[in-house]
Image (cartoon, rainbow, N blue to C red; front, side, top):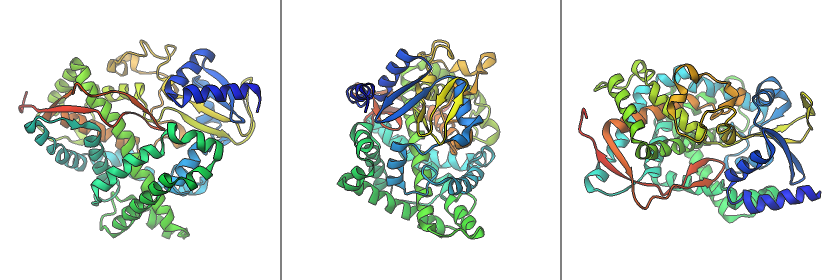
Length: 449
């Protein structure tokens, strides 16, 4: 290991494990928008230039793969080797086609009514907190909404043990925590996960949850919103039933976890921003009153919530759920005069890209209007909250629909305010989110006001 690599390793141990986002900000400030760092016997390239990003994710996508060391080890251990996060190209492409059919924009819009019913029912539970004037753990409350929404949209609205699932999701966050696992995984590969009692326990519970999702989905009579049944039918049709249960379990877990963790992280911030930005909240309420009024949310009026959509887009800009997009070079590549060698790792740090003054006016300010009007068009490779290319987040349309429906119903029914004891700190996870202890007071709104 070279002296430079040792110095970078030492800096990562001192700064990166403490706060990976601040560490990334420092690297970008020091090196610009295209640079490399030697560390852990690997060369890491950080690309913040739209031309370089397009080259990796679109133009030369076959020269790169998603299977990066840390990510593949952790996700494969947790979900199995057949999920959308970890499967080989052939299996991934087959399952991705089926997932695309279920989660494309048209299919998701057909779920607006059922999503509204599901979310409205869960928001009824908030009334008791308003009546008793007691604080609500907003992360837990939103996590329940996200969990029920993904069950409605992708798992035939089956019932699972809610308390066990929430406890498991909390433990899963620790499983993915950088400050507890990343260094050990980098140094010892899978050995750490295989010998760690905590990680083995979490995996055992995860797989039990996956088995429950598969069994109940296969037993359901519904096929329209049933990803497990659709996958199973396709496997039988193509005579690719080898390891079918393991494949179904891996995919069920990846969709269940991905479908609620990322949405929860954004919706928690949305609720916090209601409290921090009252003028923006008022604009959202005015739009909801004008577009929805006292009517039901429908496919027709749902698409007219332009300011509310911009509000979500701005949260995604400042706080993308996944703060970097990793790729592994499968062969030597040239981007102009810049060289990437086979085995090098490319990071596309969308958290930093979304805050660069070269691409955004007042990048640290919260301004939903930047996504409206004549200035809303920009290079799409400067805005990557869900990634880009063939591996763009398959559930992005469902996530947006769920967030817009949830925001609409909340602003119609409740006022939210942060408690004095709430601490707004982000957690150093693979997901960029606030801590799980954000408490808010809930007040019911009078109809029509």
